[in-house]
Image (cartoon, rainbow, N blue to C red; front, side, top):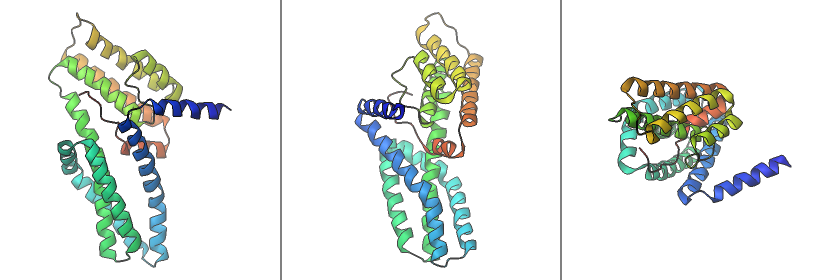
Length: 248
């Protein structure tokens, strides 16, 4: 009964999301399903059609190298064309690459599709790194503190929490405590309090050192999140990006 109630509550929350946010949820579900199954099934398919295990290992190796090399250029392209079109182009290209993979047994073609697919993963990681770098390098210490709070909200969304942007910092802390436990909630509460001071206290004096401390708190929050999650949720968190909102 409780499971039904949770599902109904979740469905009601989804209806309140914007169209782009709902599309993002569909994107995440599809991406997790495709990539979670393909890592196993595609390699079993390769073995079934007679490809040697050494070739499968080489394909995985080259894919990792390609993703590392092209992640930064892909991030620049994503910043230029926008996150929405990055998802559309990436998903479309990924679907085409999987179709080619399924209908081909030519080793050269399979190596190329593996490397191109890895580049799309690298672009996601690069976008997140550039987002963090932009917020941490904001012009004023106050903007850096607010940026750390926005990065925290995005990190929590990527850790599979619902959109928290409409909640107060206290409500965010309670939601985090319910889903991820007290250690993560303690970090989120302190980050929210620092953001409140930066945004709403007219007499606040926040210097560079204080902003650095807030970003250190954010780093501790990310470590606590990873410690509270299993391997597969951590991988999903790494490959997700929060929906783009009108904030730095």
